[in-house]
Length: 115
Image 1 (cartoon, rainbow, N blue to C red):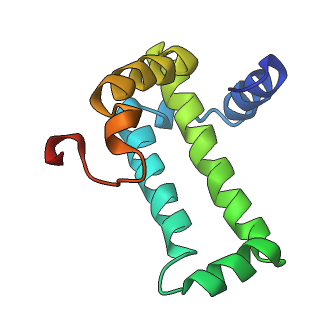
Image 2: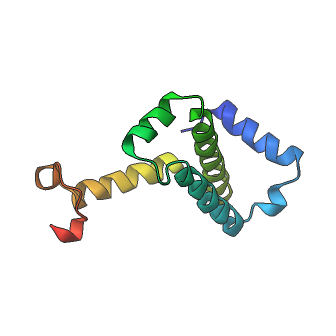
Image 3: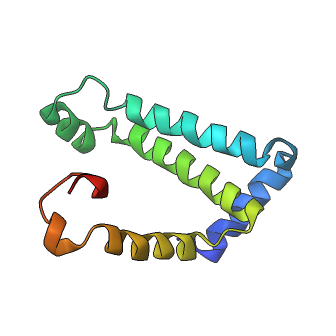
């Protein structure tokens, strides 16, 4: 998901600041939730049209920064725990194909236990 160059830049950024000491799995998980909440806050109380305008306007940069923060913390967490994110997502996709067969759920947003 990240290029080798970007992975190296992220690790160097953290190392140059001696932040590894703060990046325990628990703290990284908390940071992920907090940053995800900040992303969600950009959509809070907005109607669909307002969200569309947000995504086209100058404030889109705020949204991009929140997404980048989430991705960076997820990278650090996976790196530190030895998780191959591409493999984890691929494995989950395989499981979801079984839980949500296209012929049964096409156009339906119900959870697999509800159909």
